[in-house]
Image (cartoon, rainbow, N blue to C red; front, side, top):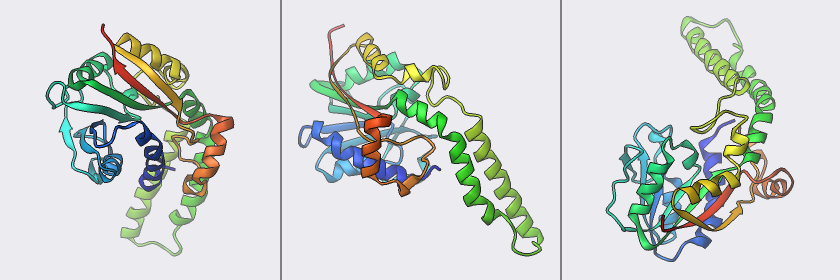
Length: 255
């Protein structure tokens, strides 16, 4: 079940690995910063961080860091002004990838590079397969809270009706899954989220992949078991079930 604190725990663990690819005191742009939790972590580690996000992001009410709103197409920074462009689980949501890649090339310094972290085909597979168990677990947790202990008053009836409606929507969303990204469906995303698809996309749009590797943590979009499954266990599961995310380091090539 989705939890921002649990998601932030996972993202912080990923930052510990990501920063090993960052030059000290670099000027970093985070695209699609969400709550800004990762930008805040980077700032704490001595990086000069600018964070941008679309204004109607799902995380707009939970921001932890100063974030610049932008239109999702045009990065509001000058040419050749950034050492590192960083994104985490963002590019799959970008409708016009060629436009975004062109903007990233524009703002990168000649010596700059990108670090992109993206969900994998393994994440897609296990998110799909875990949806039913997640819905069942949710119902076992939610139902006792939704059953009135006494004859409810009118105000209590309204609260219960809203809670039942929200619970029904949650379960229906798990059972009737939609695609996660901007392209394809839950089946074709098994290819669209594959590292090889991203390698081809980066090359097609003017980037060389100089390094890529799995991030080494297993989790699903349903957050099944949530914080009850620790980082050490998730690391071990990634070895057999696949890593949820993959890291790419890119440099601009001559088109």
